Image (cartoon, rainbow, N blue to C red; front, top):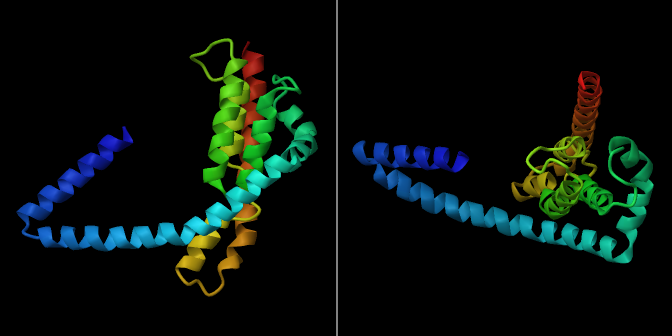
Length: 195
């Protein structure tokens, strides 16, 4: 649906620029913004590659398994319907670790694998389960300790003090996680009362 909206907006913009006689503005804008987008991608790429590589090293060395065991008491409370030895909890831990490093792109594969494992436990394949919803809340509002992508953007645009964003990012993401998980908990409790 979003792609249709974007296509509609682009077509309207092109039609307007054609009839208003400002088609050269569109051409200049496309060329300038394409160059700027490529420069931005190239400046972000080394940082994303570095942290994704660090995450892969942590996975290969068993550090993520230790992190998963460390998180196990918390995850067992958040996901009581998921068996303790299920692969989903390991993938959820990997997703949390990547999100803590501010690496949404590295968190995505672990998140997809976690959802796939949670779907295997699902009795109604066309309906999201409570653990799936809780994981979605946790993934969306996850705590970020090092906002890597934001730091990279601030460095790319020559911020005078790029690291000033770290504390506000921690506070904002911790607050959103607490609020989201609290709401999820109360909705879960209310849902059980309705049954």
